[in-house]
Amino acid sequence: MREPSNPSLLAPLARKTGSRIVFIVMDGLGGVIGDEPTALQRSTHPHLDALAAESALGRCLHVADGITPGSGPGHFALFGYDPLDLEIGRGLLEALGLGVDVGSEDVAIRGNLCHIDADGNVTDRRAGRVATEDAAPIFKQLQGGIADLEGVDVEIHPGLQYRFAAVLRGNDLHGLVGNVDDTDPQVEGKPILAAHARDAASGHAARVADALGARAQEILAGGEIANAVLLRGISGRPPIMTYPEMTRLTSCCIAAYPAYRGVARMLGMDIKWDVASTASIADEVDVLEQAWGEDYDFFFLHVKATDSAGEDGDEERKAKVIEAFDEQLPRIRALEPDVIVVCGDHSTPGPMAGHSWHASPFLLQGPWSEADGGTSFDEVACDAGRFGGRFPAMGLIRLAMANAGKLAKFGA
Image (tube, rainbow, N blue to C red; front, side):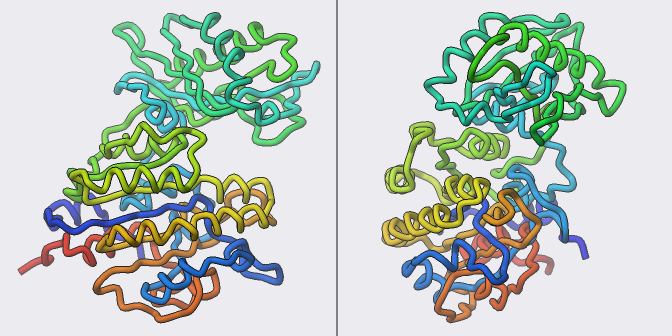
């Protein structure tokens, strides 16, 4: 059974109250239940365990059985939007998260610096995960050498490490449509792909993307760190009901990485731009404490390092990130939020070294959450929890709002 549409369901029911929700997304939190312990099972997290004892537990599916969600779809599902109804590329989220405005006729791209060999095969998709400061002169080269391609203005905006956002500006002569496939082959040892337009209207954007890739190779030829770029998440900006329109929540986002700020900005949340890209979890909680005195009733706090460790196949490091978050949890609880949600936007099991389709553990603590009374927070406990192992992620925001007294009765 498909979940009901939250934009049409919640908008007439949402009501403004003084209660507050803290919604914590630990990126890639989940693992795979099996012979080897997951990062949650490896870690020592007494404060999460204590919170779990007061919470209802479950594991959530963000898209559908067997479908591995990207970070964008995973977050949109958690915030109550059906990812199957949204065509929002990572490029748009990256650009918005960097503070760049993207109009309805523009196309945004999330780019990677990369390295290719003499035959044009990709040897390193992330340019050695080059440090942000070392990537800066490379981006300066690109910015200086690329301004106009195929009659379209092109902007290059540096992101973190090897990442950047490119924005193709539509104009009166060239309105752009971004239904274009990635040029990233996703594996090393293969050549960069051509930008393939999925429909006739997107042909011009595809040609500009190909020209961008070719020009970048000319500019970066001979570079030891990076000598080419990969283009991903090529997309325009679709219309969407904002979070204030759907939920009447006054929301703020506390996140270090641009893509997650981009999700929040796309939805109309306020962004706490003073969170540095190098911010620790403790730094993010500092910002949460500062924002607590402002007129917000929904606080989205994002933890990235769980996912980064999982993608590197490092379960021990992922466990340490969970422990670092656990140390900060008493500070969050001391604010006395009415509802706390701890969840993930997808699972990133260390043994798989990437996103997976496995349901991600979550807890929801509120005045009417019907606590399970368990003694631990991990995949096994959540699988056996009140919401089971296949709870639709889109339902989490409804439960959070209901527990916070922010939903009126449905019907007479």
